[in-house]
Figure 1 (tube, rainbow, N blue to C red):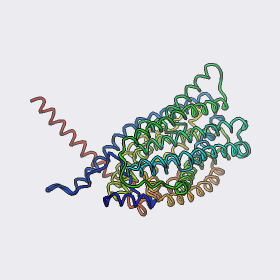
Figure 2: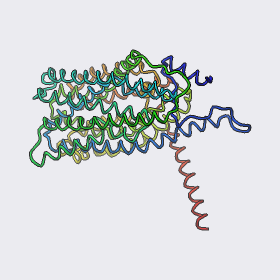
Figure 3: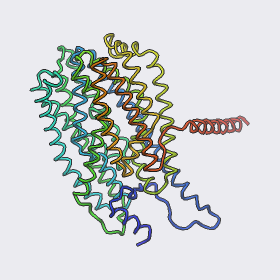
Figure 4: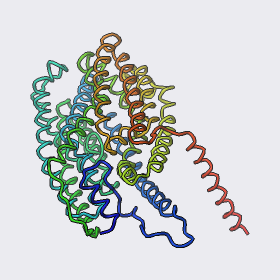
Length: 512
């Protein structure tokens, strides 16, 4: 057994967060360089291949995510047009609870399995990867069912007294069934990313099961309007049907792609070291808490608004939040693209390469976000009225305030993801815990005083502080900056000029 293989095995057996994750198409020859060959050539070659793979995956991620955002906005437009504002506010509240319950139901497996399966594949340990998948399936079956039942009980007993939701006896089971479908689909999408299959995973990624599920949801919602005016209960029935119909497709896709990927791997000569179930659970618990608290910081304002303001005002606030997500979309694309490479580059000790990729991605994401933000900040009421209807123009001030916080989120980059995929998830957990408490305290206080405008101020302020904290801890703990770097724009300009010059020479040669 070579020294390199012994080191990889030692890292894997130690359970270190920096265990090697080396995709098959990123490996290089470890033999000494030939005479006259640069020692840095293999390193540059690895970085080039990593960038090339990320570039290829980014096309699928961008296209699929644009489709997902487009279908999600289309769904919001349809619901805002067919439901009264009060029911729209309740729907957005139920959607927020559904998504949070889905995170809890996944029990952190959507991040843990990506890490552990990638580690096993990087070590050519097919048996170990299969064992992780089997253990993950067992934990997922128990956690998803438990999360759905907890959501059912919470809505049944607290929906009416806390949020003023009517007919909870019918709505609570529908939301719980939707949690079951949503959590399963999102977990399958995460597993597909661990096998570097961005094409299908992006079609299953989204609040309501991704673009495919959104299209089915939209079709059912529009179809019923041909016969009657739909109610909120009927819309939630369509939501549950859409999610549950996608579950068999998601599970079948993971099974097929996993088997195909495993068949391509030549087993290494190291002995498979199956991870005990306790190790998986120990990692999943803090990841689940981190993701749950992160979602609370991102979505608890909807819950605060649902408990304090009337449902018509909540509809204004929630519609403004939906438009605000357009600004954060470039950062979501970046996160989906780089998630599998953060742990890989960190494990290989290539921190400069990791920082270069993260800062470049944050810069381009911030540039795209600012371009989207400018028209929204200038004409918030007109845009809201055009998309959702005249009533929603009343959320113009709220939309402006929310956009400011979202711009900070994009400019900071993938700082939280860097902490979680580098084994520093406990630091992310503590930051999320602190900001969640701060958001509840400030959100309740400011909402009671200034309504949804105060709620927007609280959310934007806390989220901005949270993102800055993630960025600083990523630098202190991991050793990389994730914030945008304007120098990248100048580099991109030079590259574009070089390409134009090359094309110009080619055109002149063709003319001659």
